[in-house]
Image 1 (cartoon, rainbow, N blue to C red):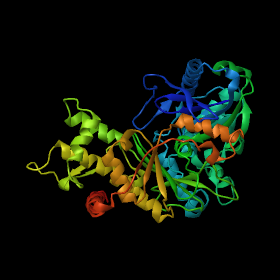
Image 2: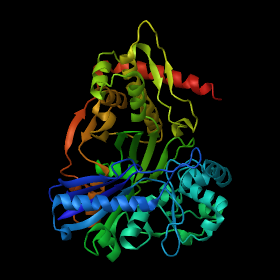
Image 3: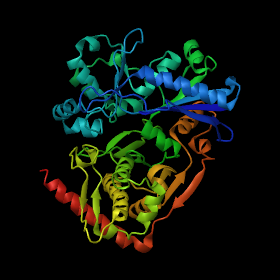
Image 4: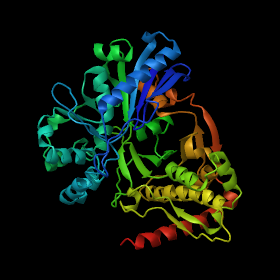
Length: 498
């Protein structure tokens, strides 16, 4: 018995085939092998063709089925993880009306800001738990104003994962977490937000039917089964946005549990059991995968735009001899905690939500030509990234998150001892590293939805822990001193933007 999971990302679509009994990955692959095309007609815009997602997903499905050699009837459930906040629109024939306006497209910021002013703090903070911002509802408002002919043809609007499920099954559905990430869910009333739809002039008829996150949502249609090489009727049993799914893949379900990633961007995602909000909109709250009306579970999300991208930039700029990341880490490890006074703000990848959408750019401070070397910069970059994530974690803790553990995939920045040790020490909790990925998590989510696993603990009982990074309490004061110096630098830089 096998479970098939897909992770529809911005750069590729990944597939993992999981043996339900052992939890072992039988095969995994991704397509395309080059980064998926993204169109940017204007600065700040970002669009992708949803049919391109579907094409690459079918390629990935064919690959894992061929490489595993299993009987395709053995695939009992399908799960989908997807890039959050994207907007897909189809007509009554289920044809895509325009390219998807994806998560990193910023054209709708003004629509969200104006909506927040008109709707007011009570609706935004106590009902939606977020400002409408640049999320899916605001993107749809942009289409309504600028592309009225397209808007008039809309039959349904969907998130990327909903579109993929539609191509698989012929059914147009979404989930409460999906509606919440579009800022269209009223948490206080636990219904679709009438105020949000009325403000933008959206009819509720364009929204998909709601299905539970974990459930037999729909079976593969004849066309979907043929395209995927699977049996007709195989159920789609789970869908979730990528950050919530990453938390699921690390078995992060309970209040106080925290998931983190540090790839191109850096994310901290913590689970709460009470409604809350950030009045300054520096972090966002969405329904977590196990959210229930009578037992709330919220995912509080912090994102730092430039983490691995900052580390890659510094490598490219000051390592023309082509040294590896391992060598960079070794050089950085020879430098004392605090990088002998060098502090770096890693905010060179655009406006940061954690800074209230202000853009500082990357800032280097404290460099002495007679003292500091590139090794100091290597360490200061990693420390600066951790300090930025810790700054966000402090906000999350002020809002009620009580972190008991942090779990992360054994990949990207978490492969650096400096990065992991600095994060664990400042967070004050161990960091557990696991061997997993989003597609494998989606597969196990499908196993929960299909009833193959009794619950999440059953599904992730055999999740393989690679390492545990303990806080370095012997040097806690050095870490704290460096962090405080970094915060003072940030304070001073932000003051210049007032």
